[in-house]
Amino acid sequence: MSTVATAAPASAVASASRRPHLTASKRRQYAAAYVLVLPFFLVFLAMIIVPLVYAGYLSFFKKQLIGGESFAGFDNYVRALTDPLFLGGVGRMVLFLLIQVPIMLALSLFLALALDSGLMKLAKFSRLAIFVPYAVPAVVAALMWGYLYGPDFGPFAQITRAMGLGPPPFFTEDFMLFSIMNIVNWEFIGYNMI
Image (tube, rainbow, N blue to C red; front, side, top):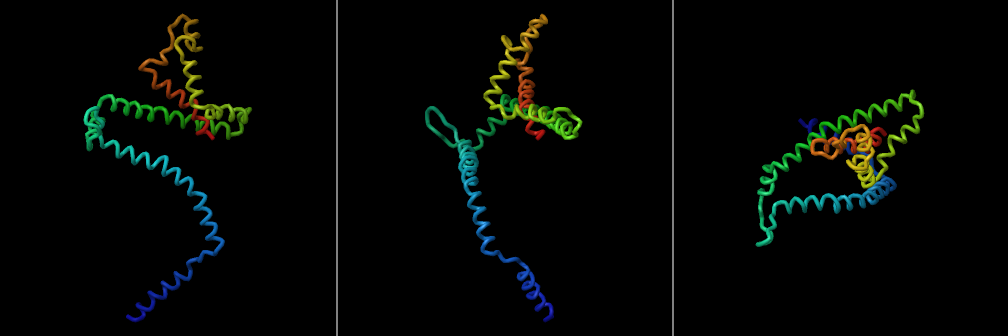
């Protein structure tokens, strides 16, 4: 019985002696790392976490023209989750996710493998040409695609008119989601390829 009692403290001493002690230079390195990472965490806390918490807090209140703000509890959530327009929007986003993301990832993987195989001619030029749309600012991309898709002066509309057809239905309710998917694929395939 006494051997068991003496064995436990001996193993604790052995494990404590195996634990490496931090030298002064290691402590300075760790302190410098924490100091250098601290600004990121402060900005992340101030710009992401605090606004999310505040928005969550505000979601429990109702603002009325007469009477000001009043506590609504979960009424706002119930109203949103029973609103057909909100649910339709969520459904469109799920459709976007299920169609656009696999297409984008498959094309990105195909292009990455094609460039990596070494069989492709002008690989450096192709890599740059595929990646450049990611560098285009979103506002410029929106203006550019708005012009390309335009039903009056866009090149696609001019081509279909020259063929005796009406303007393409890029901006109609049925095709708008697919037009947006095309723009997102154009912009992010290069990033995912890299």
